[in-house]
Image 1 (cartoon, rainbow, N blue to C red):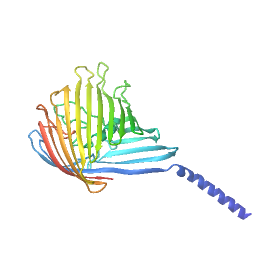
Image 2: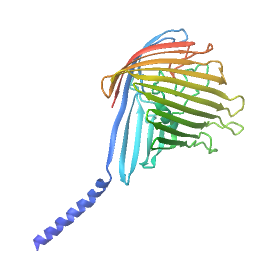
Image 3: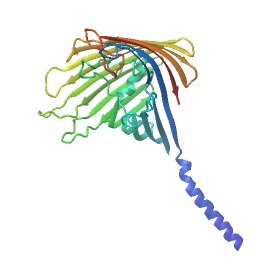
Image 4: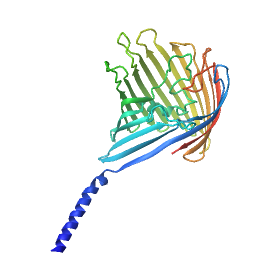
Length: 359
């Protein structure tokens, strides 16, 4: 009798343990810590109105330094729950970005249909055009996301990169990639003010790739006439991997319609370049960026940037690089090699050495 009760009790315990363990058997999850640590030692001239130069240590010479967490949980049937948190970090000072998770903070679902996320993330424009910038959106040597002329230009004719309050979709179906972003403006009294949307399509066939993106961002300030500014952009890009050389060509056509009327601000940014993989460890990347400002303030200042980067791969994760650039304004305006720093003269040049580690 005691033996029978013991067997029944053991069977009951085993059943309860199996029941408790069942969710973990079906729902497998993972979390990854990742990031980029990138530091550039740089000389740059014309850093103030007096024309003085500067030696400095700067974070993010080749790519913005960052760290983040991303994870997924297998929900079964090919469906996964996903999340991502990503923060910018200044490797020169240790400072965080203005918003700690300002690069990405989102959660969503991933399956055969593609991926849908909600929260803050890169725009669809950013995602689809990144492969067509030979400098990979380098903060100081690429104007793919924004021109490098600020002081005489009261606008930045650039790409909408990070977006809050978004719903984003991306899916790949054979050689075709599709994407869309819709971001709520969250402006009281208007369902359209502050809103952003973008639609994109991409195609890859062997060494050839192409993408086309259209987007619009509405201003969040409503004028007395009930209108708001509208920024519209069309991006396209093509590349061809003619090994050991990969060629790039892309363009942004930008227009800003002002709420108060008047002439629209229009510009076109065109860039082209190549990457020559001289050896498995050594690559050389030249790139040129031209901005044609056709109307709006400082309409005759057409800046251009020439950049050259040499990279040596110490390993799959660690690279040494050297970079040189020069920027020139077309008609007496001011210009900077950086898309973020103010310009003080009609030209600026820089050279630098950097190290990057990915984890």
